[in-house]
Image (cartoon, rainbow, N blue to C red; front, side, top):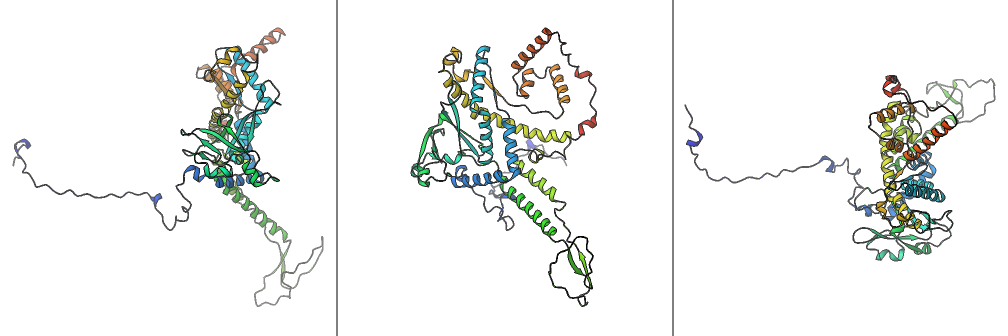
Length: 488
């Protein structure tokens, strides 16, 4: 039977049907509250970033983080290592304008001033304060005792001092705990107490009311913004504070158990059945033992020792596990936090350090934008007022036209020979530049090349042989694969 073509047959119109709707309900397992997870999510809230990190909350977190850093050697070592790796011996300025003479004059004058005020040490202190206090404040101020023509100084203050005075808190509608903002969200004024609230011998009311109003142009505020609209910082060690307490309690418990077992020199026990008849012995009786003596025991009794089963075999693994969890919130690998690389080989050591060094570079970039550029701008504003210190055209130039960059200490390679071969290969293949290679080591390529030219010229003058050209890395002997797996 042949079916008619579609265009030759017309379907009969059917009566309109009522549309039925079905409601689909979607859900997430993590959004369900059950008897098992109710207590776990009991403290979850929807507070704003400033409400969650209120003044009272930040005070508690700061005090606890400072307590751990002051009393826990791991916490102190982690914070010190983070500051030393981030700041090192201090940043170095390189000007990139078209005037080489002006570049040299600015660089040398700024670095002399930086050494006179101890800029590197203050930056390390700020980095430590950001880890244990959540934020760091520094005031650009005038200090006539600074050794040099520019009397600018950097005064560090603790976050406890930046707060709204008691008499102004009811009127502080446009501010967040010591910081007033304009309608665009820019800081305008910082209220700084003249005395630290924790100073002894000063009345609490007087300390909370005696304050200075610092304009935003003179204040540097360093903290990590973790949520949009966040105005104040919390300690970076916050997620690790309970873990430090657990590590301390576990270590003390292991030590107490070992000491308890060691306190019992000998114990007296019997293998006789309950109905046996050994000689009567006073329970829990204590007696002294003489050196190299011979003695007899009551009938049915034996001497034994308490087994010192602490520290247990999993003690080391527990410490490693909890230290790795502590260091994770700082992007720090375990071997850096513990100061122990015995369980690492060469490849795994380098792999773990990549994330850490990337975090360090991010921190250095933040310091350059938030701290160093602000300091350089303030220093230039003071330096242009000193006659014959800087070139004339710099006095009228905009800060944005004074191109510059900051150099930091480079990271040392585990195997210098391999790194040198890789560096030579990159230069030969034109995949890098001398500026980039020197920047990785925290050095200025122009300064290094000028110094090298002076050394070669002096060697020729003294009749010394010039250094032999480097070996072509392509002709170098291949490195055995096993060497990559050697322990660092």
